[in-house]
Amino acid sequence: MTEDRSSLPFKFNVAAAGILPSIIPFTFAFIGSTNAKLDQKLEDFASIPLEDRTAEKGVKKEETTHVLLDRWATLNLARAGIIAVASVLSIWAAVDGREAFSFGKIALSSGANRM
Image 1 (cartoon, rainbow, N blue to C red):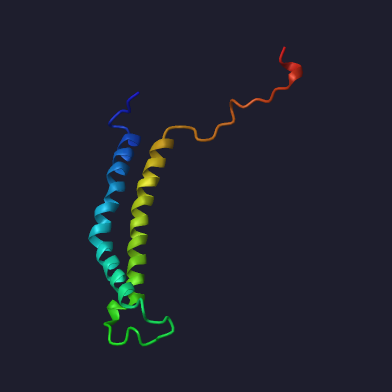
Image 2 (tube, rainbow, N blue to C red):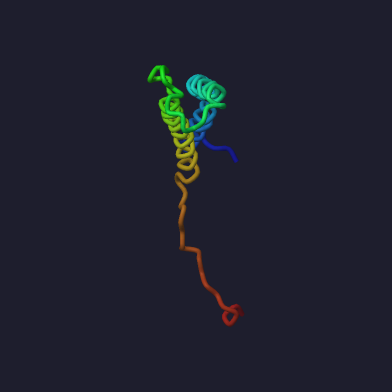
């Protein structure tokens, strides 16, 4: 069975199919550089004790580990938002025009009335 190309569910499915893979270029374009900076921090600070409060002394404020982690979390939230939009569109397409919950055909029967 094929779906009518002019229907709303078809359009939502096409949109979801186009949006979902966009997380890959988004990751490379925006999160990749932050990941690289965090990896470099890991290597730089691997031998420094966690208690050392002067480890990032002299580092630009926008390049501190805390700021980089905040940036990564924000970008990852945006990436999760892309996935959420695609998921909502797919679910909407799946249930559009259908009764999701129906109790009209549910019937209880017992062994005594089956004859």
